[in-house]
Image 1 (tube, rainbow, N blue to C red):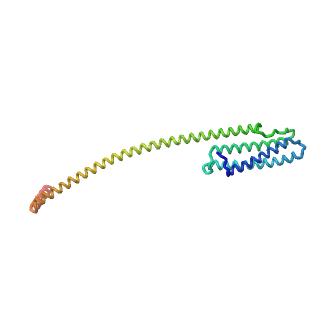
Image 2 (image 1 turned 120 degrees about the vertical axis):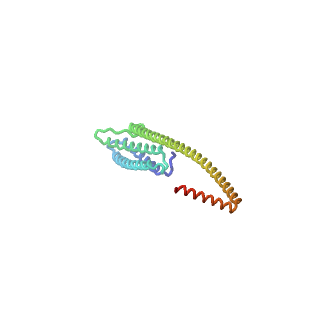
Image 3 (image 1 turned 180 degrees about the horizontal axis):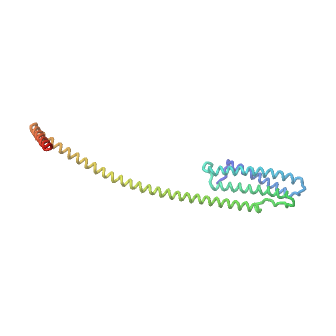
Length: 234
């Protein structure tokens, strides 16, 4: 990730690194002075104050990284960028603690002056080992998250496939019902046509028979009704 020119993290980081370089330079100068040199005591106080200030700032930076990790999308950060920031926090804290520990050890009775903190020192090597372990743990965590996401995507894919199959079955059922409704409509239209034809024929017959013929039909129907009622009550 390119270094943003206006990112507060990098602005503070540059300031802390400048302070750390200053403290390391003073520490190197402090080591070169004899124990009876008054400047050695003055440098020791300045180095201690500088390291305390750096330690406090590094703690605040770590809190900021924790907040950024919980809202990576909001700040536009990646897991790689978060890991890089944590690595820098850990390295800077180790360097600061190394200088402070060297000052404390030098003030103990019979203590030897500690070696300067350099990239090849044992302290730096220990810090790198801690960084490697941290990055390895972060990598394992990311792999675990990726595997979980893959499993969830597989499950989602199976659910979508089942939903698709149900959708196809519903589509086929709708097609069958549509065909049945079409056939029913055709049967109804045929029945209506036949009924209309029968009504038309009946109207023609009644018209040809005239009023007299219609009265005869009504009389016959009444006679049949009387016969049926007589049969029913006898």
